[in-house]
Image (cartoon, rainbow, N blue to C red):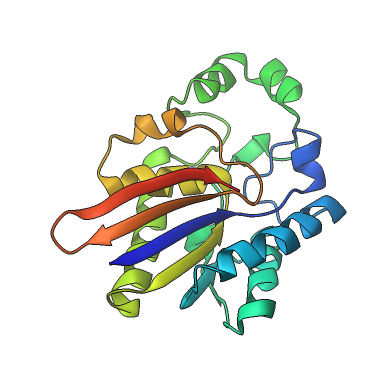
Length: 199
């Protein structure tokens, strides 16, 4: 049975400042580098056979911490990037609230946003699920796949793979920096949720 680990990147300075990142290519902070180094041995204990990552540096650097101790060579896929947040990227939550009060309130409730160039939920879920399923299909049965990615993207991937309505994603709760979601793939039942927000 395939094990899929969706691993959120370590902290960035923008995370600490509650600044919206989206697909802006921000690096890990010193804290984030430490988080990745501390988390990587726990993931190595799962004996991963495949390592794939978003091509944004906060995810690829996080993946690099695992690659360094497992010898795995990461593959990079832009479909594993965070949700694009358009004009909100670089803004703090109060700044976005001031400029787009109704749209930002919808986003906070986990609803669709059709303003400011924010990427549609369905588009995020489809690209994430497609990238992950292709990786799983190529890896074959009994693979242990680690995907270094982003918080919102990981939640949308989770609900998409499970076949849940996409608006259920906020019910999973925010995935913390360098925390992970585990899913297993059964040949009969398909994808099943094992755990969420593991350190």
